[in-house]
Length: 272
Image 1 (cartoon, rainbow, N blue to C red):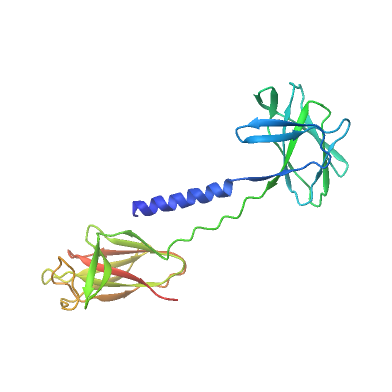
Image 2 (cartoon, rainbow, N blue to C red; image 1 turned 90 degrees about the horizontal axis):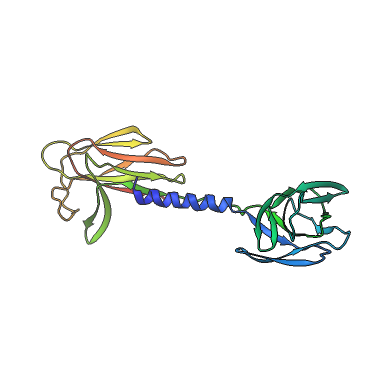
């Protein structure tokens, strides 16, 4: 496989996986916020809220399936926790100390799954030193699959230009030590034009492999063309059109020289 193709595919895969793994958050506003304080971090400066005395913080939970709460305290607490109230049911969640930023004791984020059809929830904390910020954890954006090119060249012995009546066409060479390899993707079908370079009276032979299986051995006659020319190559033979099996999805095609000849090949996609 051509190393540049490998690098490109790995890069596309890496970007796709990174995009799939990236989590998105949307900050939520409490309906009855009390005192607020700013927490300054590398990610930015954000307001955190404390409830009103002897009150809980109310959140509109419509459409929320996962909630993330980020909290800090202005003093060190022995057993910090938040109490979430959904439909009258109270659940206490202990908080784990993460780091100290300035004078604030910052805790690990708390992620909670919200039952379906929940319209409102409450966040309660008896510690008056605790401040909280809420986020709706959004599902990752769907990642569009990377579409491969219909025909991807993977190996050859060099590109050459075949000239004919003032026009030109690109072919790819192959030798006994260097086959021509390409993949057909997206269910596309193709055929191949192949020309041998004639050296003596020996018969040029070519093997056609699809997905590792030999599907055809092609023998060429010794007739020379006078209409087609390649700079630096004499005695160019008559071309053969090689049909490939129907491609349902993706196929790996390989042409191998079975005789000591140079061959020129041109894969052509069949129009749908």
